[in-house]
Length: 80
Image (cartoon, rainbow, N blue to C red):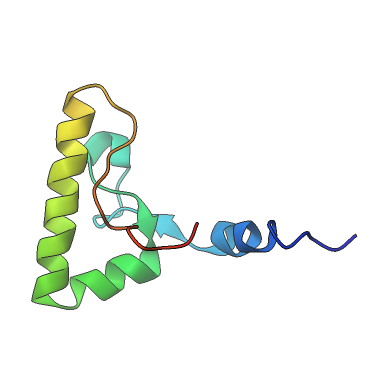
């Protein structure tokens, strides 16, 4: 049975390799969890590295407050 239109992006999303910038567990480092391709793209420029650092700061602050999710801005504007 073919996938519904609403299910197709989910299939593509699950095929992506998701990781943290350091490659360690997010629960240990407090880093954001994102697709490897996005992290590599951000690491390749100084503006991207600063954006990644800001996202990690926001993630760590939210984690320290006991929150599971953080509005860090890396996925802003992405259709999910």
